Image (tube, rainbow, N blue to C red; front, top):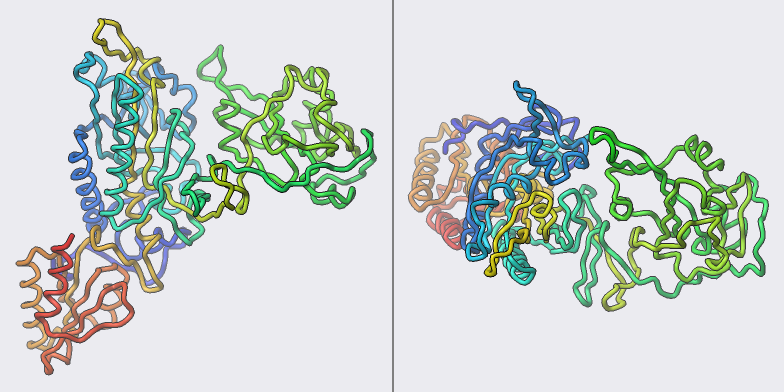
Length: 587
């Protein structure tokens, strides 16, 4: 490809609306162009990157025994109603009606479709297991799309699904896909960590994410890991052992104490001269559920989280514990209207007759003589213990849940070593769905005895566009992108410094042809621009190799530069060509 013909426009400045470095660089380097909020055109350079990632996916998945198909992007509501997700998926599902007034949606995922596809085609145990996948456009109507391709509304994704007759068969395929994913990301030039994760809207009992660890702030999750035993999980699934904690408030008796204006945990700890972990704080939430009587409506119910004062609520864990569609912090007005108490003095005390669900975080276990709100303005109760709780406070007794955020330094649940934390970008995920979709959709196979059973399913996703963005997030410098060779749009660029110098142009053309003949994907920068402009564009775009043909040809030398190295090296044209060919052939 000649640069004069390449359909790309690099920009001098970063886009104003970009936060993530991958977003900034991909727009500035001419890889994509914004059409609407969270929706982008993939320009030729980006299309080449995405094609290469997809090629790697197909090769590894096909080798692992999966088969590719393509499913409809527009899906009928009736499928989603069968699975029960039409009512609960949320506003991210873009719903619409066709000209016949049939309710439809744009597919953010394809569990319902694939279940309907397999049902009736593979109806015998003899035909199972089977693993099917597609690489396709998806749409999720994010409320605040940001970070470019890391959280857009329209994106390209590989999603795969397996169907089984036993849990043992699913476990085997789950590991098969985990191994294939490890190979895929390694071939894409990305080091990933497989971490335990939350299944989210897809559901399922077991799930893992493949995270690219980054030093930037745009990683969507904290990843907690143990260097000793290898435990790793993202923040919405991580757990820890709380050790060496002093959670006895030391109060001699149970009593109500005036605490005028003392509403924060920090101020309360100072007021009583105790540690924050001797306070059982209350966080009031409003949880949204589907209305059982009207599928098109939702209802809100209050939920009170009781958590140790030094801990914070992990809202994904809470959402799962409540089984709600959405959650939000309740307002001051809601607290006063529903509980009769203003925020800062709330607890479960005396609320047994309220329509209120009370959840205790595991961090509260073992607390003694602690402080809670008195459900009266400017008052707290000290010296409280779990044995003091009555039916007037909580109907059905205390129930504990894992709903808190893990902190760095807390002990690993497996070996007790201190946990460390880093940021991660999710590029792939695998789920054990079980019968979550096959059972409600009545998708059945017949066993060897003629009895029918719902398929046992697995689900496996990779974000194609996210993988490209994660690579940029992971590999860049002040000058631009540093693509891994495996997924770079072109392997190399040849730059004649002076296009008016016939000798330079002839040698550049010769090098260009040799690389092309050897199967190297190469750009010849034949533009009549200053050398500095060409060099800046080469670094910005991120070509892995650059051969510069300049005045040194009088010495029989060219400059050879690897994008990831700071300095160029002088060598003969043949040596430079051989360096690139050898690296490309090693892929």
